[in-house]
Length: 146
Image 1 (cartoon, rainbow, N blue to C red):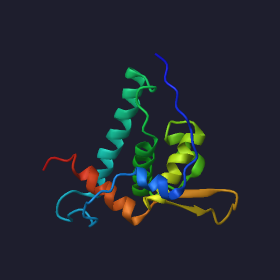
Image 2: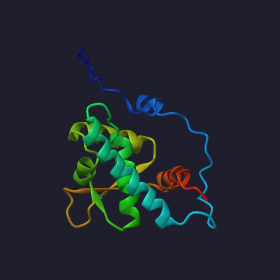
Image 3: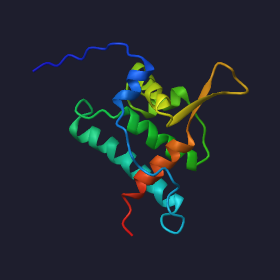
Image 4: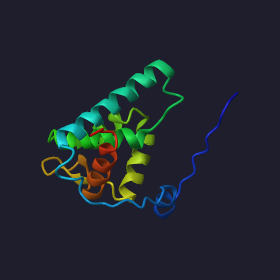
């Protein structure tokens, strides 16, 4: 069986419409509960499991570039590393055009932002927004059993 995927350009407004409306409190995770290192450990494990799943079951079956980007940015934020757009594309484990398309959708959803490199104007860095960081922390906290 063969599947064909049509790529059709869509506007930013339509891209955001594809993202589910999440009615979740955007507050910081409880301070007395889960520590930031614990959340980063969950993110690292999820990222590693994704790689292993792709190796064992085939990456053609599972493609989640946006999720990989968010996990990678959450981890790099904790490790105080800046990721360039090209590094984010590599971390997404998808073709560059696909990763860039998902990066744009994440920007439109106000989960990530791009900033110009002050030393090299040809390069941009990507990081989670405050909203993106809070949503990821809230989500990752769900994986921790207290």
